[in-house]
Length: 267
Image (cartoon, rainbow, N blue to C red; front, side):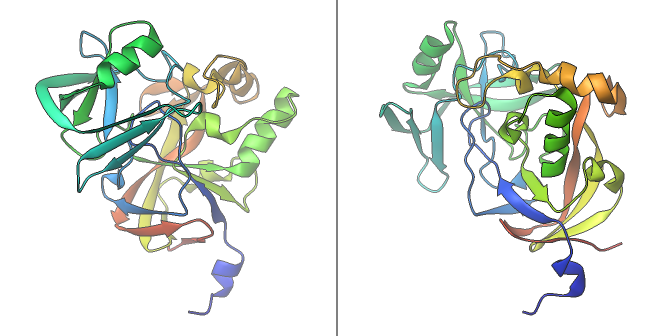
């Protein structure tokens, strides 16, 4: 199909970022399928403490070197580290648990039996459990689709005088090019065709201390929240005043999205 003039000059998807287990290493596939609940296979699992509270990357970077792959059809979960370690087992749901998602809501799931809780607890230095969520999309903080412009991250680095900032720190589903810095902030309420999917852009994403962690090593090495606040101040978000970068979106029409797809505004 020939591209239109709007597509030729439109922003484009440059990176897709997903992970089956929240807080694990991000994967960057060439294509994802967006459902109303978000990208299929993204954040199906979370890690909780002994009180059922979510243990996110804000609290620990102990698992950023672990890459997980989950086959929903077979129920096999495969986890590997950068040193060649591998753990592979069929997911067996055990006791039900209500996951406290940052105090925002309680999300139902089931503790996963097998080697997972021991593996994750040893790395974190405290008792934690792996939980398979009952509903797709419930592993998202607020909304399952997030968008961030490459120019926005470049601008942040320039304003902070730090050379570069790795955009993976923000763990956003869609990274886009071809826009001025912070252009995505002006898209709220607009409908956008991206690949075969149609999304509606929402409000700003409040940033937490998770963005201060190195995306490969997990340690806190850059005061990113302070860097954003220094030139942007506080903004109103769905969760109240916060330090924001990037925007949320919701899926109006499901479909496949690929790296290189144009973002075409339909309104």
